[in-house]
Length: 163
Image 1: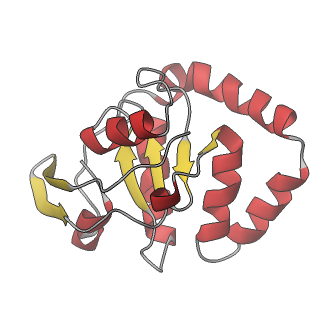
Image 2: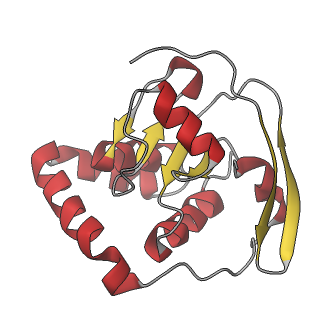
């Protein structure tokens, strides 16, 4: 993987009838979670993460979006495979965790008992965890449907959602 310089992101996040400016012009740093923006389950999980990350450190971006595509390219990952969660624990270092390794790391970042859930999941071998992940990834649209635009629950999230 190659290191990257600065990634500048300025956009307007629109979802439903609600919109807030998203301004993140400083060097992007901290944890960033990339998700399939065309997956209802994935969007619901991003809301879950944003609500439980009380420190407000984790930023999220759709794999298909500008920031997601930039980060995928910088990390030399495929830019058209949207069946994998991608987590950068510290985006400025370009460290990348995929699938359940990313899930375990995200849980260690969010508040409450979810850290314990992350530690518990981490006990299981990656191959076992990722096997279950792949089953859900292949059937997620059929089971959970398409995304349902609802607007953001909290305007404070706008700075944490990258274009």
